Amino acid sequence: MARSKKKAATHNARQTTWLEWLGLSAPPAPPGRRIIVCGPNVYRPTQRTVLDTENIRVYGWPSRGGVIILSGASRVDFDYLGWDILDLPRKRDPDHDAEDEHCKKLLLLGATWYDSEARYTLLAAAAVNHRPTRERFENKEVPAVTMKEGLCVRVGWPSTGGLWVVECVNPRFEEVLDEYAEEYGPTYVEKFGLVGLARDMDERCEIIERIGGKFFACLEDYDGYASLRAWEEKTTGEVGRLVQTRYVDW
Image 1 (spheres, helix red, strand yellow):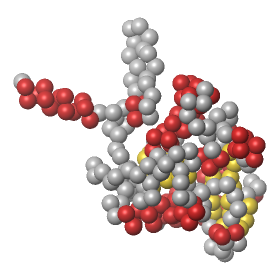
Image 2: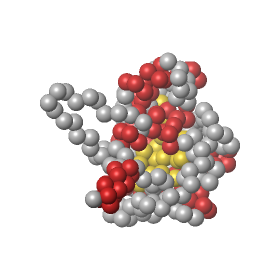
Image 3: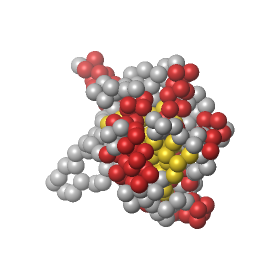
Image 4: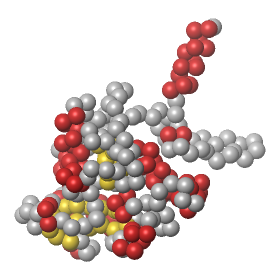
């Protein structure tokens, strides 16, 4: 009996709902009703690919600290990374050098470099209009969303050379952006979502061009707001320090 209780306690201690992982809580259930929280019930640190019902996110864990995340990854992104869409990697690379090389590729696809996973989850909650989280921003309990944190970015690398970039401030962060992002941030591109329909990288570049993206002859010429050149330039976090996350096998 004691062994069964201990096993149950250990099992329960490992279970973390996705809401708890985000630092949120489920709404109270009406009398006589149960609320079932869907989603992954175990938090897995240093993960590589996360699939949910509407989005695929690819993570990178730079040795410098923080976490690099490509949200809304599509078939074209996976082709660029050299991945089989039917066998996407779920864990990060335990080798620091290999992981850093993966991080560089993510940045070239328009990924965002966050100070920490905790900062990302805070922003993700604000983006879906979680009221308590939005109030923390509005009451200035946490730093406002910066330009780089609030951008939507897509990058295309045509076979003829150069690169195409389209970027805009995510409208979901309205009222929680810092003053610089509000004043100077690139306006929302109405047809931004079309980029995800591209069948290959050249078609992605064509779509980016048609919806108002900008062409650069080389990466060194890029002068936008995104993190494309962050690997060479970034030394500090956006609102705090770059938090290092040690590798955990699971």
